[in-house]
Length: 380
Image (cartoon, rainbow, N blue to C red):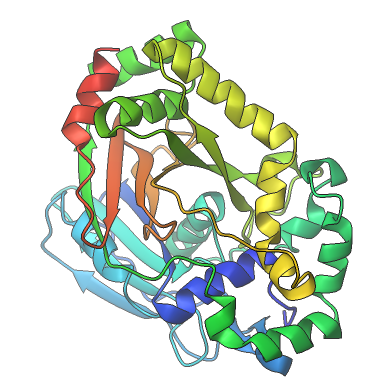
């Protein structure tokens, strides 16, 4: 507690300063047992410290819990979209905002927390801790400090990270001010969502085809987006926790980065394999680690041009195969966030073992043609 936000955490806090930037976790479980206001569950908030730099601290406000006693199985998406726009996790705001949807035979929790606090993995940890009314664990140390040196390609990475915590960086932060600090980030735009769920048979075929062709589901979706939307590149969310040894604690913390990959032309599965190999190659040379350094460069290397590469489409979400270790009574668990990378977002999730794709579209951009993407994937 009371530590400075890391560079990646601070980036999401800066995004949040112009419009709420939340992680919204959705967990559906069997039964209609009531969910009461938690007593033990608690998460930190961000508040300004010296030089206006954000720091973590104990929340001073209670969370918000609302119940919807008559709900349908499809209402969660509209509620998740609504909770993307509520202010949480900063000084003067509640630390979290939850809506409990009681359906005929199940209950769905929709819980919003600040994205500076959690990524996909840790959002689920926090969501399950909320349901069990247990403390989710201590805030993890900064991801950037836990990564091995080989996770970065920039030869200045170690020096930039050491200097991030210095008074010099604080003075630069204060001198630049919020407007210049956020100038490299995409401006906020409202996000609207659509969802398409495959049945079990179609889900099995997609997974089997990916395995047979030696491609990941993410790379296959990237090529489907290429063919349907004419894209020549996509961004992939990369969980950096996989490179940290020993593994980071399971509690709140942010360990996500993004890597851009070009989409080669040519046959579908050949292009998908190439995209997968390109992604791994970019990670190997440190592109994912270097993406965490944009703010340190801006503060500490002012003569170096800093550019934020906008993503036309970002692919993120669940593991590429399987719904991943959910409890037996949980039929759906996923995390939704705003499309704030400069373009759209495609979220991979599962509903009762069925592949579920959620498309987020920012502003006035044309909606992602989900039906055409699913059809292209099915007929590849």
